[in-house]
Length: 145
Image 1: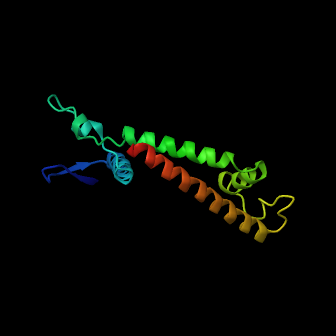
Image 2: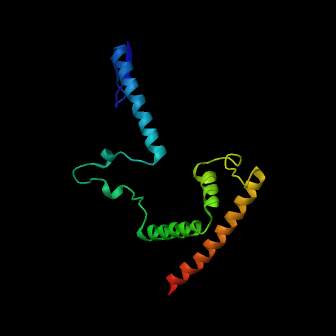
Image 3: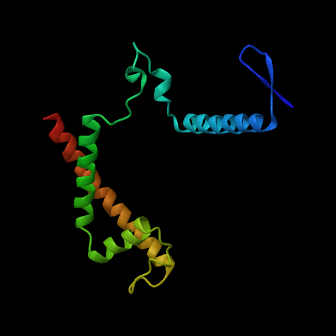
């Protein structure tokens, strides 16, 4: 015979089957609660009542319109900067960053050694940085006008 404590600290005798079922349900509830806390989520039911729907207490994590516009402008600038590179250079950057390929996996005909690939990648990134720096100056000039 097992004993189960109620909210008032009163011990109630229960069978082993009932005790194990209640224990497993409590373990699942604790697991879900812990996962919710890790992810920063809340139970909507906790805030639901007749007078309070809880919608005012839930944080809005969506991006503001200005952040969205700036991100779109930056993506367009990066797309334009990448378009100025040759097709081979674009494929190299695609293999390295989109496909997460190693330096050996990204080797091409004219770049037949990982050291050459690394140097070429660094040169491409410097070239992209210069192009994006020029775009940044133009972008902020157009905003301040």
